[in-house]
Length: 84
Image 1: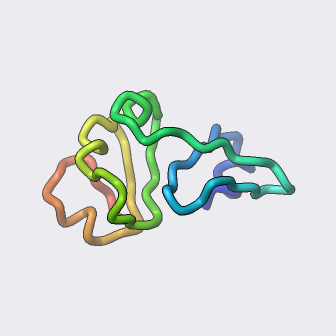
Image 2: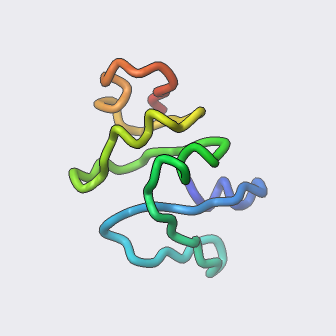
């Protein structure tokens, strides 16, 4: 998913407590971010692909646009959740 977004010109960053570094799309490194409410709010779109218990899901309340590949996230009753 990240590689497709990069090919379309998107600025892609990631937050994953289990992945210290990420390189995709012809060897291009993807910079990690600290998962904070202000960091999430600064993005045009946040895509959630993996559920981790170490993530504070309440942080996503400040994110204006988000989508998820996780059905359980869509069931949390929050407007703005879109399941892919």
